[in-house]
Length: 354
Image (cartoon, rainbow, N blue to C red; front, side, top):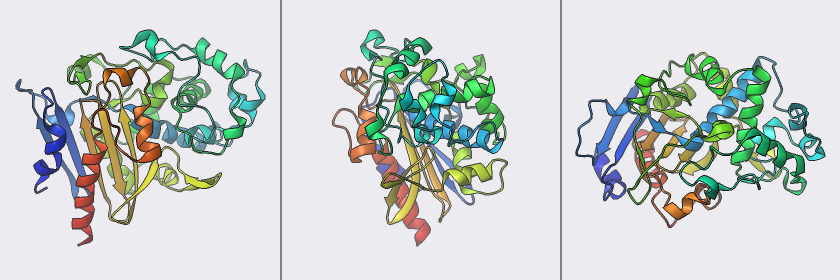
């Protein structure tokens, strides 16, 4: 793509350890591009470098729900209370698995008993199933049911339920229903030794190297690691009807009227150049990601960066990701990769339209 360097220059400047990998998906195939400020040359092709993809994981968890529903293992209309029998709380019998997947359960972004400051470098690793049970025992967000409220704990709970129903770990579900059918061999929560050699170090917005996150019981909300190669294959599958899970992917593209707005299983909706797009972004302490596609023109984009938009203080609160969803504005601390992705995608949409 012409002038791609101009689109990314604002994002790449002053990031000493940056690796930025981009996939552009069109009907004719996939093109890969990369930008690196790291002086140390890598022998790993950029499209096969592995990144934390953060909350893009939530899309995969929603697809898993739809696949398990297709196999009649459960229903997205099942009440959450059905799957947490050790918790007696009537609120859980008012929200469904669909509520969790569409962020309309009323649950907050984080459980009220989740103290991120307890382990700043790996804030999700300390939160246990016992903590989750304690939170659900007293949770009551009945007044917010049906309204959109982005919730990590909600989708984390959904992933947890899917694992319990299937009797399988999240990675096994991922492989069975998505990564194996789509030949996405570089996508997992737990990496093997070969994959670990391709797993990049992450950096905070200040440039400081930060530890990788262990999402523990939140893995369904943000635990996946992947490559631009694999996520481009995933976008390609969402644009085409000739793959093994096409019917499930198509179902995730259909809006559901909940409360007073349309919601999707996993996806966010936006408009660029008057064209509807489905998208999701992700962020962890050391990584930032963005994925979007337009079905009408059959084009999509993936961007993965080993720089976060977090500053060290934002790590303690983990609210910056919420800013994009609610206000669609850039957070003042750090730079989200979304703005760069949208500029490139607008150029692609414009060229396809003409």
